[in-house]
Length: 273
Image (cartoon, rainbow, N blue to C red; front, side, top):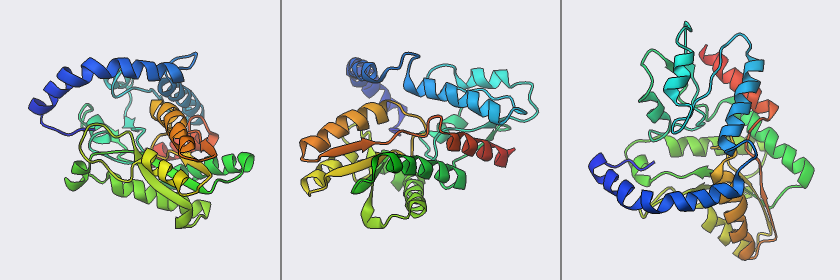
């Protein structure tokens, strides 16, 4: 996420971050841990199993960019396949995420760069929102919160912000909501540099102070619930909104194992096959 020269980044990593962040992160992970393990890993495994059922003619393996099983391990299981397709589960392309996967795979491997505007992905997002509204009613504002990125990356040509905005606009169109009914924000800011604006939690606080009583928050940039959605949004952001005067906060589930999302993954893969 932080694109700095190695000579600058390593001292910060080992001198500050690794001395303080692991203990804080461990406490946060404890609050969202599932019986089977990390939510991100659990949902990824389930998605893999369901996708295998949807595409029985393909051999499908999963891997983690940071952690295990590593991408190299996943590719090794596919070594006898005639053609290998890698689907990074980042809907919007960024050099810090999607391109980092390209760095560890061979050039002959087909990699799907992004699916931020794929009709099936948008349809899956819309189905999740509509399902929530049908069961719980509709909030005054729909907040679409994407993972943040330092502005410096955008100035250097990263298309991430433009793709996030495109996803949000298309989703709003499918949901038939006016621009005044939704807000696009960015979360998970780290460090002192300016990141993409507006920031999610401060925006929620301002909405509450301005008289908005209920918000629904969806995170289109995450296909699986994880620390950033379950703790940062559903706990921390919720607390901030209610403390500022809001009355009702709904954190919508990510795509996870929704049938529309499994079908969307199958269509995205088939497009590259």
